[in-house]
Structures are given as C-alpha cells and as structure tokens.
Amino acid sequence: MGTAGNSESGEGRTELPEDLTEVSDFFRALGKQIKLLREQAGLTRKELGERVGYGEHQISSVERGVRTPQPELLVAVDRTLSAGGLLAVAKEDVVSARAKARVRHPAWFRGYAALEVDSIETHDFATLDIPGLLQTEQHARAVYAMRQPALSEEMIEMRVAARMARQEVLTRWPRGMFSWVIDESVLRRPLGGWDVHSEQLRHLLEVGRTRGMVIQVLPLDRTDHAGMGGPFILITPKGRPQHGYIEVQTSSRLITDPDEVQIMNARYNILRAQAYSPEESMTLIEKILGER
Image (cartoon, rainbow, N blue to C red; front, side, top):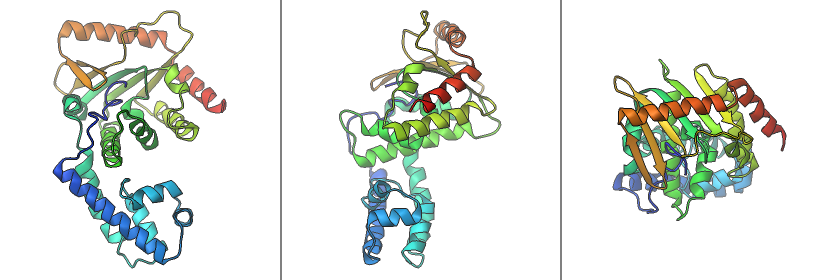
C-alpha cells in the first residue's frame, strides 16, 4: 500500500522481538496501575478521559497496554487520581521505552529507512495513501489497524511509533528539500473515518504552508498522467547519489542504476507539471475539508 512506509506494517506475523516484548509488558503493567487507581477513585473511563482531556477509547487502550501512554497523560492522570507521583515518575521510562520501540522497522524496509535518516532531498509520488512522512498519528494507526492479515495491537503501536519517529527528518536543521505529489483520490478517501481524515487534511495544509515543504495534488480530471507505473520516491542521501525507491505489498526495491534514476526523475518532473501548483493544491484541500 503506497511507498516509503505507507505499507511498512510489514509481515503479517504478530510476534515481537524479545526487547519489544519487554516494552509491551511495561506498558501493560502501567495500564493496570492506571485502571486500579481509576476504579479506586470510582471513575469510569469516560469520566477520567473528560477530566484529563482524552477520549474514552484512548483511556481504554492505555489501560489494556495496547497504546503507548503519552508522558503528559501520565502526569495528568497522576494528578487527577491523586497517585502521589506513582505514575508521573514513570514518564522518563515511557520516553525510553518509546525510543526503543520506534527504531524498529520490517527488515525489507530498513534499507530505505537508513537512507531517509541522512537524506538531503526527498520527492514522493503517492497514489494509494498519504505519504508516511505526512501522516498524523491517528491516520497511521487507522491504516495499520485495517491491515490484512490483522496485526496485533502491540505491533500496531510499535509501527505507529516507528512512523512518527521517521518524521523527525522534517523538523531538523538544516532542513532537507521535500516535495510530494499526491493523487486527488487519496485526499477524497476518508481512511479511518471523517474525524481522522479531516485532521489529516488539516495537517497537510500546515505542512504545505511550511517553508521548504511543497505539496502538490494531481487532479482527477487530468487526461494525461505520467505516473501510471505506480508510486515511487526519489531520495538523495548526504554525500551520495540520488536513489529511487518503490514498494508493492511487502516487497521493496532500492534503485541505484543512474539511468533508471534519471528516468524516474524526468517522470517526477512531468508529474509536477501535470499537478496543481502548490497554492492551487492548498485551495483544493481546503475545499475538500469544507465539503463535509
């Protein structure tokens, strides 16, 4: 499904490596503590969620250990349930555990992930889903949850954490050059439901208006389309030649042949010419948001 981690959920297997099993066990133990303290306080999950600014489903997921608790959630719950620091003191351990979890990618994706960390230029043509670097946490979670065969809740959380960690390349300085051409059909398919999708569209608007980030939409009414061969990425690691990258299902290929990469480059340039301008693209995204 897509490129550069849009399908990075990887294998259908649900077992975890030993170190990630330890992380999962830690989150489950923390969730049990929250549940016990909540029940002692006589609160439902919905009531606790309302007091700390989280949804009932989020509280339930944290209590069951299938969702990584945010450090700020631990502090808020600790204060609300008068836990005396029992939960708040664990926030540094949570940060450490999340760091351990998020470096994990499927074996077939690690070659690209290693290039992405050190890239100075990335250009992405997306036809099936929002590019991984642009996905919100809720969108990523919804995509992993709909995977067939199904992933375990633990694996979903690990993959979401890994995807969010990848997005750090967008915030570092000096910043690389990034551009995305996204097929309009992607923007009109509300994966995860409209609430998740509208948040995702707003995030695209925010990124698209950030200096150094260029998002263009390839409209559905184009009668000429240079990307019929499927989605792909062009990535330039620091001090190295540009590479191409493609994915299908759980297979991937890094392309290093200069002639092939040059053809992909030319194809991407044509797609940018066929797409709306960045300003027109932002206007279309706003329009789609307003159609709900």
